[in-house]
Length: 392
Image (cartoon, rainbow, N blue to C red):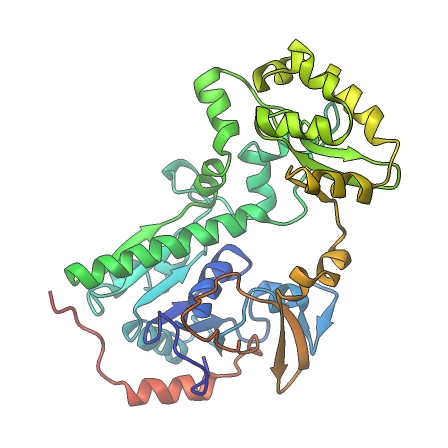
């Protein structure tokens, strides 16, 4: 963070970021947004893989990279070279947190595993984000696409009877990154209380399975093997997308009261009076019959008509927007930051969703160019010569 911006709640926390792609960078960006000084260690010449994941590009860096690396400083280090490896160790020795998501064993090959660096910095919170925390598969790569397949997510995504579908965003990487940030914050609090660091892990597979929530419980508790069901909900009806005369919208009648209000709003009170549909369990059992009736009604009017009717009846509903429509809305525009970048010009990025109402939101620093802060980070090392030591 720049010196001119207000301090965040993690001001003073230094994080050595050896992560790349998405899960790790999401984790470290969340902490950077909260005020941590995140030092991103990248390969010379190429840097984080996502710098090349385009088009679109801005000044040579892909939009993908720009979306998950604000508020960080970059230094390019070749860990196969002695001097650069020593610089990496110097950064670690002065850090509160280390995050890495290499394949298991890679950090150890450089002498940077937890057991290698912990003696010199016992205060360090060391967060690894492997593909699998389970020992049998620790050698596997950790790409979101693999996790969507192997965790079962693709089997429940898409239309019934069609091929499995990948979600439109690498959401399991995002979830794992958020779990990582939560774990690090908890470890920092514990360190403040007890005076020592620790190693922790968030496996991408484990975070993915944890994200199955009710679908996992449907199987573990009820023996039901979930399958793809389009936008419909396995346990609630009606809770899905519907087609109007000019597009799609969603309706979330998540309890009997809301269902009654919804049927009254569309002039179909007869559906509430039908004993097959009087309760949610009945509606789940007779899903096809109910949805056929509702679909025939919704086809008669445009999206705006139905969304307005449900809004007046206090029933949750919304149009199914495209991305450009999202950012054209007032609430979408409020999620955009205009970031002044001295190299790339002004770029538009999504804001952090976290709001502290008793303080001023810091203006975000632009995502770093590869190695942009190498000189100032080396200067910081020279000016901070004493490694951290635990007071425990």
